Length: 132
Length: 374
Image 1 (cartoon, rainbow over the protein chains, first blue to last red):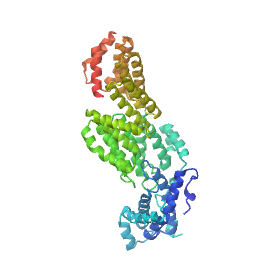
Image 2: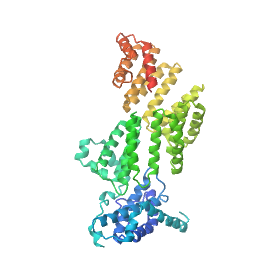
Image 3: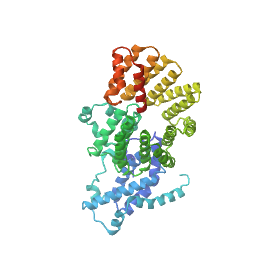
Image 4: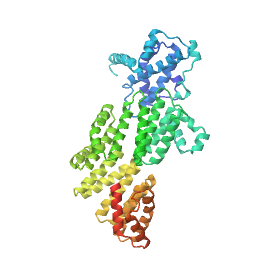
């Protein structure tokens, strides 16, 4: 995913946005995995959603009282699962895409619950990158 | 690209998802807030509310004005909330629409509380909760809602409930890493102790807060704490320390743009000077206080301060000026039903002023009645 493509402003001078960007990039592999492997999104659909997730995550990290970008990654995963679920439900509901048992089961689960499973992988990422 | 990806545009994906430079967003937010209602709709300014960065800048500006222009903030935030709720504008992606419903409702609640409209403020807090509840991380904003609910309970003199519920709110602020909110909650606890005449505990909390806030975390709150410590210092006979704290409070509150606090300090300083026998400086301080309250639209408190000014002017043997202050105060006192209908002191006072012989007993009775209301 190319973040610059859909951003509308530059981050070079803003250390906070650079930090958000770094955290997002570090988590992007997991986000992509959730969208494509679990929620059955097409590659290009996933890339489009990731762009929205990025701008949302920048704003989310600036909300009053929210934690640092690195501590906010579990919320990024919740947003990712929630958006993927709504998107797939939208496609299935409009008849554009057929469902299957595996997808149905996943769509029945709460996005926060699915995201919690992914959060374990975030801890694994931290283990691999001890500086975070 | 798959067919579905080419054909289907998911409804939540919109142009307004793009980020806007914070300075550009602030400039546009200022233009929006200074424009008239007609100019906003004719110029399509309202459409900008779809953009989260723009709306975020508007909320930030309104938050900055909360203590100086609560009436404006109440009006603006309620108007934006209504537009968002009616679906006339759909803001951002994911939970952003709900987040801004919460933000604008919380701003309305905070401003209405400052204006003394507690029932309406509580209603707006319910709306704020309803919005925040659907966001991805509701804990920090809901902790702020919880604090404001406690502050309203304090205003309603429900002190036992405040003391019972405060530890939980403080724990939330500590866990969530919100030191400013934690400071405000501790101040609320100190003020509750004070109201319950538990002065030792109140003073201990205030002194601890004073040290904590000296780091510059919250100038406005630091000013408020100094107002209270000065009152205790004065009560314990440390008069110069009291005056010193009050003057420092005035500087801090002015720096923080806390007009309500500044107004309060002027009145408190007036009381201190009056008790010291410095009547002419007391009058000046009271006048600055009532002018500040008037600029905030707090007409009732401004009228009460005018009554205090009139009493001080009579004591200083300046009856003509006292008459003028009373004549300025009485219409608001009656219009806002600050005294019961047929309250004898008001009639006596009006009559005595007409005869240009102000009745000091009627004036005192009125002041005492208003003092109880405040």
